[in-house]
Length: 137
Image (cartoon, rainbow, N blue to C red; front, side, top):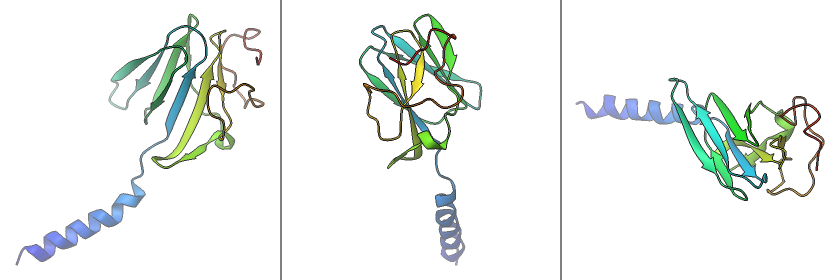
């Protein structure tokens, strides 16, 4: 009878699913006052760009890299460190970022909801943007 091997295969696949959790997500809030864009680059080399109107945020799923274009700058988001990981029901983690009027990108604390009126001390590599242009607001 073929149903037993198929049932065993289905059980084996179901048991392996918890170990195949999706990657992290990011949320980018545009506090710059101008339209920004976020590009996700995937394993196969394809990319997807989404417009980000001022005052709005995007939650974007797993990618190899994310690039933000704002204030005439194109910046690659870098991992801000585990202290900035927010736990989310839909992913193993969510990292939040806020684009300021200077075009600089700041990491937000795990419990912060954009727009953040005050920004936490930034991790190494943050804020992202040209030196001297990225003072905390």
